[in-house]
Length: 187
Image (cartoon, rainbow, N blue to C red):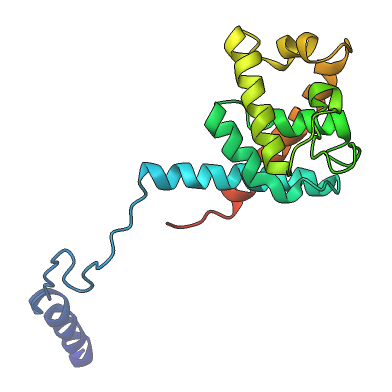
C-alpha cells in the first residue's frame, strides 16, 4: 500500500506540480535568412523558355535531327515574333524530316521559297522564316496551322501533317509536366 501511495504522489508531483517549460519563439532567431527565396517574373519566363527548349530538343533528338542543337534559336524566334514555339519545328518536320533532307548547305528545313532560299546557318533560317510567318501569315489573319496551310503549301494535307508534329511537341510537353509534378524542384 505504501508503494501505491508513493507512486500516486510521485505521478502527481511530476504531472501537476512540475513547472511547464516555456520556449520563446522569435521568428528568425535561430537561423536568420541571408538569402531571400522568391522567384520573380523574369525567372519564371526563363524557366518557361528553358522548358520549351528541352521539349523541342527532346523531340528533335528522337528524330535524330540536325536541328536538335537549335532549340534555343527556335524559342528565341517564337518569343521575338510571338508565334507558337512548336510551329516552326513542326513545319521543319514535315518539309524536310526535321532538317535531314534539304538542299546541301541551304539551312532551309522549312521549304521556304520552295526550298531554294539559302541561309548562312540554322539560326538565320529559323529567324527569317519566323519573321516571314509573322508578317506574311499571322499579321494577315492566318493564325492557325489550318489557316496557314492553304497559303504555305499547295498540298491539301499540309496542315494535317504539320498538326501531327505539333501534337508530338505538345505530348512531350505534357510528359515533361507530369515528370516535374512527380519530382518537384524546391525553390
